[in-house]
Length: 289
Image 1 (cartoon, rainbow, N blue to C red):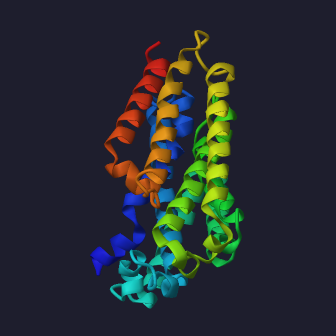
Image 2: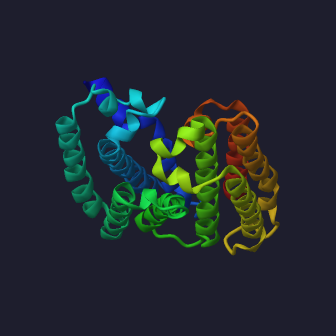
């Protein structure tokens, strides 16, 4: 039962919540122990909230998941985790998350509540609406960044990072939709209704458009944001971002995978190396020079 609960909470997908640290890192407060502690607490609270959303989503999608070639093995769909138990766990996690969020910061609690409400609306209705489904999921990443900002007193955080975050999330989201169409083929709409409104040629155009916008936005950030070093050293990180975007596109279109970006991040070595090198460069530029 415990293993089924942990699997349903999708602990592996907690990596998505690491973006809460964006404000801490890019505002050069990573070495501030108070700011770090508050952000770390916010990270774990978002992990609890995201796990609650996953549980609710699995409960609502139980019948569709049972028809899916992979999702049918999820604990709720397979019967390993009874639905009444799953409901009780979701309620317990919410009882923990929101009071602690408010104590940590009222503004953080508001952002966390907005994140939960948006994702609840997604699970109930919005995930069935073409384009809106990915737009809403991507908004969740922007709210994570905003949550990190609400936890500390920021002085040098650039709004450009909200734009880049949203575009990158859109890129990954539409890439996931393309991979699902490829994987499920003619039965795609029976597993996820919204896929009936997408086609691979359309998604290819959307992905190419958004990838170009992401690269341009990030490039503009590297030399126009007011908080960056005046020597424009941040521009040195552009090749790593470009490679990461192209690598994900290669995985989706050539290798035919990509339906779970968080899982790809954990197993694809070239992508991991690109992200690691990007992170090292960012830390060096902000904290050593």
